[in-house]
Image (cartoon, rainbow over all chains, first blue to last red):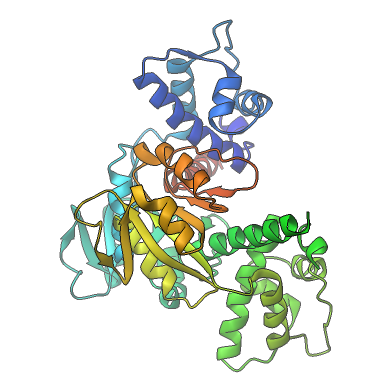
Length: 217
Length: 217
């Protein structure tokens, strides 16, 4: 299984996470079976895409009534989830850090934000939204003792580059970077940048182009 | 120019936004020229990619000293920016909404969050982080009077689907959706979903796969 999984494209993994949330919500509404084109429609994609994604993970128990929702959820669980809960640290407990923590820990996932790091004396030593907040100096120690494998960076952009070495030294395996800083991590660390500015500037560009296009017609 | 621009891929637009921020920071440090491989290195990509992106937008004034930083910034401005500031509304002024507003409006961009919408009586009618917060019932009216073209959704996921019709009716052209809800907008509205859960689950998956891979070796 692991050999198959490691060949699954990133976009398929993202969609599996999305399918699962849709399927869980179907299950709550008492829906036991779902056709690929219905699932596809709920995600604004084609049925071919859904079937291709599920084929990639080796799921093929399509019936005349569509996919069995419960069975498909369990199959996706077996692909996406670790056996144990994976621990996450959040670096930077300002508005964004607190928003992410509240949002995320309310979801009951196999991922859990267990500690926060900051340098602000107003925050260090306190418990914010049930999460203990430590000084960044203690990052390596706490990551080891709490067995944290993922770090979320929600610090100010100007200090983000100072976090790279502590993250590497602490043995963090995955990073989600919310700042505008371009951070490069060595192989072996999975990292993803999400900068709100970039996404909004992209949307603005296509809105502008759309307007110019329609002005002409 | 417009004809060329509309063929620029999304990923190139994202990178142009990122290059610009790097170039602005170079300019602040007194750097007047930069080679494509240096710019590439700062973004963890290849020089070929940088040159291809700049070729796509028709920028070709590479010199022996590299690109002129100021000229390149102005060229990217001419591609990405509207002539006027583009107005943005934020729907859902909880922690995430407030974090996005603070983060974003401090950047001095050609995009500006000018109003917030909520249904919480504690928020409606107040000014939060210098942004007036209106009841969602007034969305259409305020979008028209403030000439808002982009909406950011940071509401709870369970109410997100109720926002689609007001957004369409108000004539919004671009949407950034931060909830887990899959929202489908008609053609003519540029939309982007960013769900923190999906991204973190993806990172967790690749961290898990990496661990299983290294266990075997």
